[in-house]
Length: 242
Length: 262
Image (cartoon, rainbow over the protein chains, first blue to last red):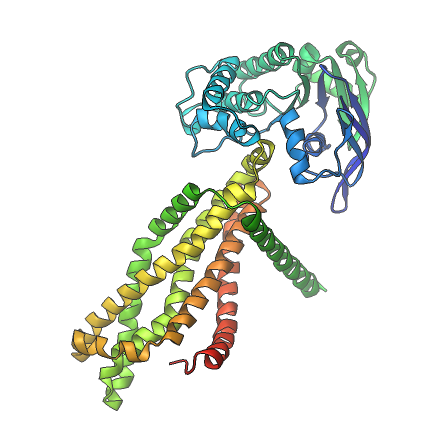
């Protein structure tokens, strides 16, 4: 479904992704873990064309997309919905209009279909009554869920989560993590989750990748990661134990 | 070496802003923004600056009247007070004043708004949701600043004439009729063209700088603060430099195509 082939991304003199190669089969829930600044978010952004790789290839559904134009990327962005680290809701629009935003731009749907999709997406994130509220009137955790509903409304084949639980309290974190698993299984999507949360990764992921300084230092199933001798993985596991 | 690095970064920044401006023009040609959004933005920009521009215009008119009165009394030419004060406002002070007012209020507001949208990933989200931020967000604000500049210039001029009449009457006992009498003779088509050209150029500089600085903001809340400061500094410097350039070029052009600048 998704392949990164020797992808290199540089910002000035700093190389963030160093010949990174990664394959993600359809339907998998993949967690990418790593310390801050190792290129996790950059990886997601190169996938949807918000950043362009300096070298290497990115394949999505058999198409090499790294050289796509902004117009060509529109199709990829329909397939790959991204949930950002911040809720990134539009302040001047209601929750309903926020969720409908992508539907109105990506598709020419009748209004009744848009209304139905918005309400079903909000129901899927357990916010059926929030549609008329403004983003400023709801909590940060709710805003994150609206952001997820906005992405879900497009019915993407791939869901990309950029640190979905950053800044949330433990209870909301648990509910968002549960939601990720529930929605990924329910809609049979391929999900790539960038996170620091090893506990969540061990309980939800089909596969976990540990990224360090732009390279994959370990990958495998949750059980494999629990037995890993890689120092960075052990440090993350130590956090789980404590 | 250090000054070379600074010069290099300034040239780099000007180049990037020019490329951004070209991209806005390309977007305007290919995919114009929604009319509703444009009118909404024009309304917002105009209303944001209406009171300050009106007040500033009134006092500029008053200041011009005071300054011209002091000098013209000696020549017994107070009858020309209204014409000269209005001509100076139309040609130079009005466009400059509107540009500075807009830079302070709308420029800072726009760059902070766009900068916040950038650092909270709203601009990235727009791209992911199938829209073009240049078309949806930047273009309406860019065009609104230019359109609103002309409305505000008109308002500023009317208010400055009001301020001039009041102070002319109080200070030099020039009647309203006398103040207005020479305006049509002195404020010629070329004066008005000069003012309009300057107003347009200043507005384009302001709109380009504030949208560019906001759109390219990095580094969280501190970055937004820096973008606002840089917008204020860059627009002020840009407008003053452009004023000098346009004064020179416009005078030459107007002399060549229209006639006397007065």
